[in-house]
Image (cartoon, rainbow, N blue to C red; front, side):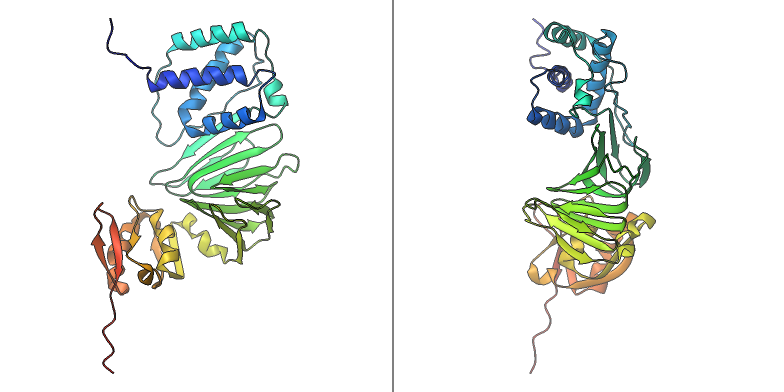
Length: 334
């Protein structure tokens, strides 16, 4: 007995899932919930799109799908690991699919269930400008990850982490929707910035109009140029404010602008550029204010220099995180 493979490999699991989705998405009884689950699965890992595309190629070879029905335009991340396909499990899964679904077609695209383009982008230590399949352009900040899916009735982006500036090609019949955190931004053609860190999201509008909705809001709030909407997980509605978007967009020039912010407000903006988050010792430390313009590629130096410009000192927590502590003022001698 071969004892080297007692359990399926992760790659086999992805292949099986791709075969499952290829069958379900072309079944007449496929539900809306299944289609949403497929979209989440597709966006979760670049390998999912690779395997799904391979499965579709087998279906197309068997003339079960038209050649142009479900093409995935896969744009790899900056660094991508590739692996050879194991065609045996794919062929077996396809044989099952052929037996279960003797006739399939372009119904997935026509019904708006299945995207005809999928793109995934991920940056590390450098920014990247990319073009989506609809002609829109996106500039990605450092440590940013997003996916793009093009459906018949909408264009959908999921910003998993980081920050992106969008110039959306206008198409009133094909809305452009950005999912970030527990909310979304809906546009038809405009220029705007979306920043996501943990469960915080900020949307800054530069040109045109966008509709921003948070976790609990129903209709959403429409922004005009110069406005910013922010929300956290669980917020019933986004918080709106007028914003100098030159500060919010300074990252495009490699700058981090902190304009008289409390450390509590500034830390999420600083932490997005650090490998490990900077922590606050207490609420009193968080109320200290900071200003300045810093290089996004050298935020580590900013952290080390904070004790030189603020009444704070640095310590290490038990897990090795850097902690900011307020220096207590001397007692009042009066």
